[in-house]
Structure formats: C-alpha cells, structure tokens
Image (cartoon, rainbow, N blue to C red; front, side, top):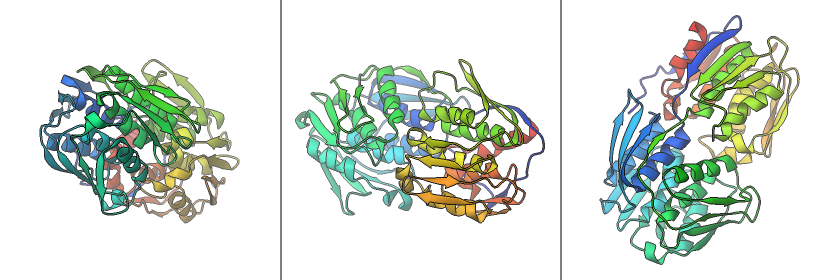
Length: 440
C-alpha cells in the first residue's frame, strides 16, 4: 500500500482571502479496520467499498494475510475483497506485525484466540510502549492463554484452540481505550455462548463502541450497548455468525476535521463530500464545536459544509471532547484565532496516543508563541492571532499533530512541519488535499 517518500520538512504558506473549496477525504480508518476484521471472520466473500489506503489499514491487511485470509485490494477503486474464513484461521502459527496501528493491535487478540493456532503479535517501539493490560486481563478471565514478557505490553503470544471453554461473561475497564472493548465485541459472536462484557470504569470514546456495533450488525451479528458511558454499563453479544456482505465505508470524519477547521481559521466555505448527516463517527460532531465558535454548518445526505465567520468572528469555547478526542489537536489549532480562551476537557487518556497529545500540543503551541496550559484532563489555549510567530513544529511521529499544526500556518507565516511523512499512518495524500485549499 502506501509508502512515505515525503520531504523531511513541510513549509506552510499562509492563505490570503476566504476559501471556497470542495474536498473528498479518504475512507474512515476506524470503519475500514473494523470491516476488514469482521469480513475476515465472516463466511463467504465480502466486498468493501471506500477502503482507506494508509499505513494503519495496510497493517491490518498484512496481518490477515499472514493468518491465511485472502485479501485483494484495488487502490484506484478504493475497494477490498475479503475471503472470509468463519473464524478459523488457515495458518496455525504466525508472527504478526501491527506496525503503529493501535486498532490492529487491539482488535486482533480476541479474534486470534478463536483459531486453533499460536500467534505472536508485535508492533513498533511506539506501540510497544502503549498499555494492553485491560485486554490481556479480560482475555485471561475468559480462559484464553495470553503470554507477555513485558508487563502485558506487546509482544503478546495468543494461544487459540479453547473457544469452547470461553466464559460467557467478562469484565473490563473502559477508561484506557474503547478499542479493547471493540476487539472483544467483534470476536464475541463466534464464542459458543456469546459474551456479556461488563464495564468496571466509565468508557472513553463511546461513539467508537457504537460504530463497532453498527459494523457487526451490517454483517449479520448483534450487539447491545447498555449504558456504556457510565460505570456499570455493559455490552451483550449473543452467539451467531457473520455473513459476507458488500459494505460501503464513509469518509473519515477525523480527516475531514482539518478542512472544516481551515474554513473556521481562514473564513469562507469548505464542503467535504462523502460525510453526511447520518455519520456514525463521533468526530463528525467536530462541526458542532465549530458552530459554537461562530461558524455556519450545513449537512446533506452525503456532504457536510462549514463556513467560517471571517476575521474576528470566532469565539472561544469550553468543550468536553471525550467522544471526539482525535480532534483535540485540530481544535488546538483553531483556538488561537478565537477572541477568547478555549478549554478542552475529558481527554486525559489522549496522553497515551501516538504521542502525549496534551503535553506535546501545548509544547508546540508555545514554540509558536501561543499561550497554552496543560490540565489533568485537557488543555487551555489562549488567543494569539496577533502574537504567534513562525517556527519548526515537532510532530513526535504523530500524524494528528502534523495535520493539526499545518492549520496554524494558514494564518501565521513561517510555520514548518517536521517529519510530514507521518501523515501516511491514516492520510497519505493529506498534503495534496491540503494544497487544494489554495487551488480550489
């Protein structure tokens, strides 16, 4: 799939005048990796339209192929064909590399346990540093043998062959990552008694769990989410099977957020095609945050449009981003151009993403002369449209920082993005699409 081939630095040239642009963003990474795994667990051949071509989805496809699943990809058509194996992996022993893909690494372990083999799952040094304890603990409670030499972090060794003995109930904490719960959910229909998953702590990123349930339902399984946002919530998945489907993946709302933010910062109109009013993605609500800041938002069946208020029209907000946490760096780039401070809360868990997305964002904002402060569960960013200055922004190998801070350069001269190739993780063509803001 995608390779990097990017320059070591990306200068950003400020834009003069309001925007009037229509863009199309790639398919949702979150939906793509869920659909790829569920299609592999299904019986029969599935066709996925709108598939994202990026490093994270390449990692999932490579792991599935190493497990013996036939996956063919037509990059030009954005289409993948998956020959499902019904939860019985053809390859009994495999070494799998999730690279930097958190969704791949966290979705796969419960699915690996459905097979009869022994599977080693590893990832990048960055991913090895991220916690897997809640998932490992839950899988062991189910009766799955999971070995880890590094305190329940990657690499993990999962021994299959025991699904007939799986417990019917398990508990997991929800305050580290919703991806752990999603991984259990997607494997659960193929357990002999299904699975009831109780939550011992409040769940972060609730919309992603809803998204998982919707993808499962699209392929013929069922999942009931009961009070998943509070302590004591649960998810119930009855036993069943997945059936092959033709499934369309909508545009990525996280990717779209950068272009909506550009309209807020520069004024004018940006329409994103492929992301409509019925989106299942939590990050689609980012436009509601922009509306609270003074932007005008319109939605159609297959498009969303944001019009910025123009010079001096943005106002600061106080917002809980727990359900759209990937947009925090995007909002941090918009906030300096508002008339008052912007406070983001509910996102303490993003310190454990590809980078510390609170500490790193605040550090780089200050590098640009923008006043910002860390808080235990978020950050505060102050107005700085007249005082911000150029600098080379460090991105910490984090795609969301690279794309978010590029927005500041639309108004502030001299902004340079270090390691721009890190965008390949989820949006390899970002710089081309970002350039279309200038050409219309």
